[in-house]
Image (cartoon, rainbow, N blue to C red; front, side, top):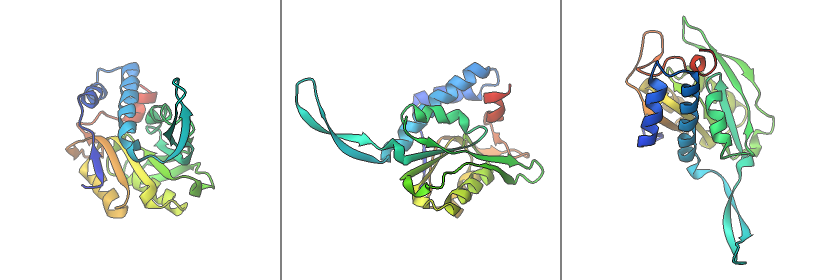
Length: 212
C-alpha cells in the first residue's frame, strides 16, 4: 500500500478511542472528529502548494519565507460525514474553496448514487484537490467521487483522499482504479460486516455527527 499513509501517534489513538466508543455523546464525538481532522490535515498538507515571499522581523531584518497557497486548494467533502472534517482543514487553509459531492447508498446493492455536485467550473485553477470521507468502507462512494472529479478535468496526481477509518476493500478499489491517488487515514480496520459497515469502526459517522 505504497499510496496509503496511516497515522501513527498517541494523539491519534486518543481521538480514535473516543470516536469508537458508543457511549460518546454528540459533543464528544464531534470534538474528537475535529481534533482528529487537525492531525489528518497536518499529514495531508505536507506537500501543499507554496510560494515565496518576504517579511521583516522585529529586528528589522528582511527574510525570505515560504507562503502557503491555500487558495489553490479545493476541499471536497462527501456528504454527509465528510462535513465533519471540513472545519479542521479550514483552520489551516482559510482561503481554500469547498465544493460538495453528495452520495446516497443503496442498502441492498451498496452502490453509490450521486445526488449533489457543486464543483466549480474552474477546476484547472486548483493545484491540489482533497476528498474528505471519514469512512472508506466498500469504496464505492469515494470511487464515484473520484470519477466525478477526473471527468471534470482533475488529474489524478493532484487528488488526495482523507479518511478516519478505512478497510482493505475500499483501499484496494481506489488503488486499482486510481493508482495515482494518495490516501491518508487514521487507521485501517479489519473487516466490513455483512451490511457494508466498517468493523469495529464507529457506526454511522454521519448519524453520530448530525442526528443522534
